[in-house]
Length: 204
Ligand code: TMP
Image (cartoon, rainbow, N blue to C red; front, side, top):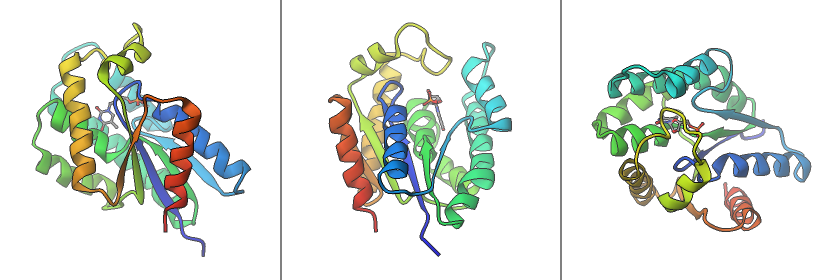
């Protein structure tokens, strides 16, 4: 049976990862004739979409711990119903955000214990690890300009929060250079796309 792949797309809000994931999906289908599944966290479909709605739109008090568990609940659903069945069937799964988002946002951003987050991520994912994670790195001023004025609950965090999140991603990449690759996302879309294809071609 063909080997499946699990590839995750990460970065601060406004980094352009969603656009790049779509471009890679189209390229792999059209040029390489591969079977590609696109998913995202939070909110791939069904129950996940309901959890996403709460996470991004609920306007009452949300504790950091509760927020973390909601992201993890969505992750468990995504892994069990979409990611694992597709990877095990030899498909290529592209996922817009995954475990590193929780370490970067709730760990480095909110200040929750990173060891605990790692442990919870392992439970939610049944220890499935991405074969490749691409972090789209961009300065926070540019990313915030891209997000614009229409912000969701997470995007309303300040510059300091997003700088911590960005630093968190860069630290993660330093700690796990075989899996996590950093791409400079402050360049034209086509140039970034070429880097993404190269990273895909380098997979075993
Ligand atoms: P999106 O806008 O890329 O779809 O992501 C939704 C928001 O949720 C974004 O601000 C990042 C945030 N997020 C976390 O804080 N922790 C997580 O574990 C995930 C998956 C997303």
